[in-house]
Image (cartoon, rainbow, N blue to C red; front, top):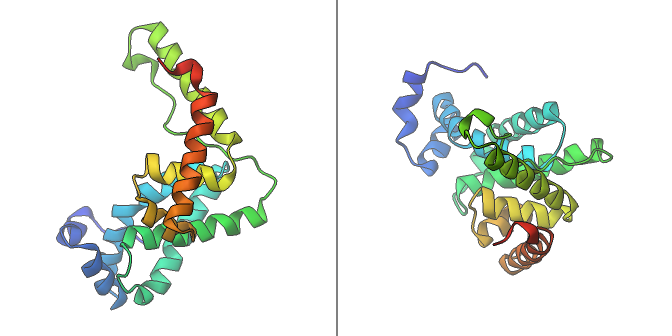
Length: 193
């Protein structure tokens, strides 16, 4: 999709998700592009934490939005648009794994810390070590637990939204999150004060 100038998108930026989805279902490209701008960064962050191949991340996000564009007229507003997009994205991640199932998963939570951001070398080293330890601990979690933890703690979804996204009951999503939290708490004891 060609990206229109930002001033065109600003006309639709204030619209709610259901209005945007309805307009996109009628073929309104600017409405769908607003959806892409609104939720693209969230989806990109989620996919980046679930697969290791950087090119694969871009492909999965792009495939998610292509599928969403093709299926937008099926969106009925029964769940939040964000949840609907995450569900499509999760299926694309699974499809990607079928192709690249042997690749390890990279669970970076944030980009590496910029050493110039803090002049105290001990703080920079401690933060870097903490993030590396957290990445290792997340990589050891079962995939479903990791997905639930990332969706809850990083992307801020509720357990019902996570359940819809990953095709789990809210209770099962809560259980996966609890087990992930317990495992991470044990593995990260060194960092707890």
